[in-house]
Length: 263
Ligand SMILES: [Zn+2]
Image (cartoon, protein in one colour):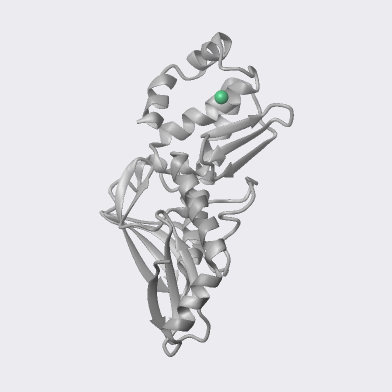
């Protein structure tokens, strides 16, 4: 089995299967022999193949799971692409910088991101900074992601995804009350989640709406469209003529917004 080998001053050998292509990266102590490393990789063969199959499956699904995207040189936020600069520091933070903007997306002292990859994130009354209000950040020259030195790719990604979630939560906290008021339809609970095949979902019985965090990559009007769409399900389960008539009333340009999500 092919793998990429990195030697470091560490005590144990580590193996990772990296998205999106499933390449295998082994980090080994400087003095560990090649034979021993080969044997270690061979012993993990079943696990490696399982991980690779999982990654292929996710890639085939289309939207892709943000939890498995690697941090690239750029990041698309609210429909605009920014250069992404990763710097090391004492704690995790994500900021818009340059072009007159210096806006914190979030900062996190804790070791673990708050459920960045895990279960549904319920949205409470707590405050998240809303960063794309009034186009404040549009002029930003770059997005700077501060990571703890010596953190792993997985830890960095978990925090990054946690910050993306915070951005979406802040927007929902702003938009949901406005649209509940306008439509007269009220959800009992709003949640966010990284989803691969849907932009949102609505449990009509529980009156619970779940919004896909990946909407953070699209123009804010797309998130707004999904919020209204899911609220409309509280009045009409199907996507039939009655549903479309509701959408026409609530948000006349909803088809244009939906088309942006398909582009
Ligand atoms: Zn629907």
